[in-house]
Length: 125
Image (cartoon, rainbow, N blue to C red; front, side, top):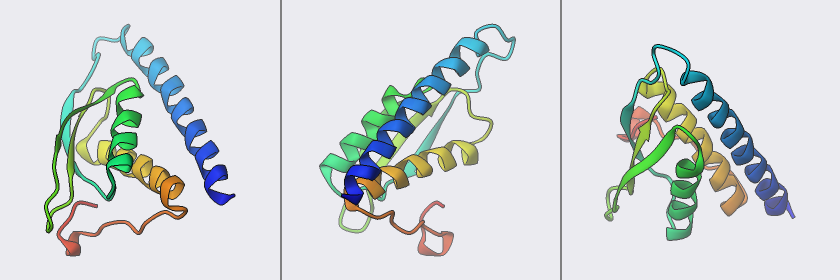
């Protein structure tokens, strides 16, 4: 039952992200500083092919973001997404939004949100 509630919550989160992303794209069209594009590298906590696919799809359907590449993981390294972000102010801000989205997805698929990575673990926060 909790997964159904978290699934509905995640769909609502994605729909809100699509609406606000669309609004951002439209409003930025009329500004002189249209975009500050960047590509960020995000090591994933997603473990299964389904989780990686759902996460990459969620990023890509959100206006202003696009998964540019996926690097396969190894036994010692997690898979990595390279995400093109169009309107973020900094790499840290872009990563924070992506990590939040990933946490929400994992809460839906696993029934609980995993702990955040730390610098001492050798991964990005």
